[in-house]
Length: 381
Image 1 (cartoon, rainbow, N blue to C red):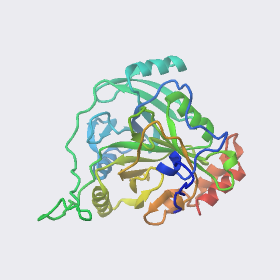
Image 2 (cartoon, rainbow, N blue to C red; image 1 turned 90 degrees about the vertical axis):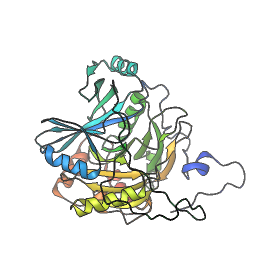
Image 3 (cartoon, rainbow, N blue to C red; image 1 turned 60 degrees about the vertical axis):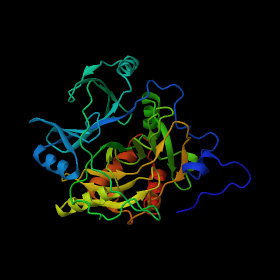
Image 4 (cartoon, one colour; image 1 turned 180 degrees about the vertical axis):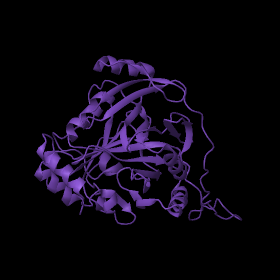
């Protein structure tokens, strides 16, 4: 990992002083829209289909979700924080991602967005009720913007351990015995999506939902062609928010990559991971600490191979910070931790992956042979 250079000739730039070695060059993507339609406040929940809701519920409890509601056709999952549920799983013939729902700051934003795009506002079947407008992003992914009428109440927390650090001795005459139990999910943090139309999709989220970019990644030797990944946060003005609520990257696929759920601390991640491992679930990658976003991470696969992340201690940015820029590489995904796995990167060869690549190269999109080779190089560097 390289170090941030010290500017001895004058004041530090936001990138040297805060989070990134590089800022934008003249003419590069600004990372925000001048006049977005609305500014969403956060992710509300993610929507999936699965054929076996009983099996989905077993994994959900083992991973650390609480059950907000359950019917024969739907399973609503939540965290301990007050607010909306984290996820809804509907009964379907196959396991698949249906799309994200973003939370509007106020009810009027749902109406304003619906009027701008010419769609109808409808009731949403979330526990507590609410209103929503349904959209599609340029990749064809369904996206909902919702306003919930009655937020769910908070649940009991998994308390953080009291730590001794250096000469700061806050715990004496007592031991540390974190229980071997599921991590207790607090909230949904972010979702990562892959798209063949990166710039069009990025601009749609900035223009339509008012999101702003925290960090761009570009391919080595191809910066002049623009970024290929963006970590995107909500714009709540001076209120600090997660470094990224949404991340997008260029690739041959379209749709879900992983989603992340906040837990209390490192011990919650580690003890919860041991609990999952003892029950035979597959760890995809972890435990480590990321660079973009800085969060502690641990990635797991559910029984349908959907990837989910436990995270803690992520960066919080206000609207003032401009985007950072950095080269994309596998080694640049973490400050420390085990080597990134092929399972996490999705680089294991398969007939399905080959068909996906060939289809993407034939279609009219942003993935061409040069971009594909650059992505392949990045995933091995």
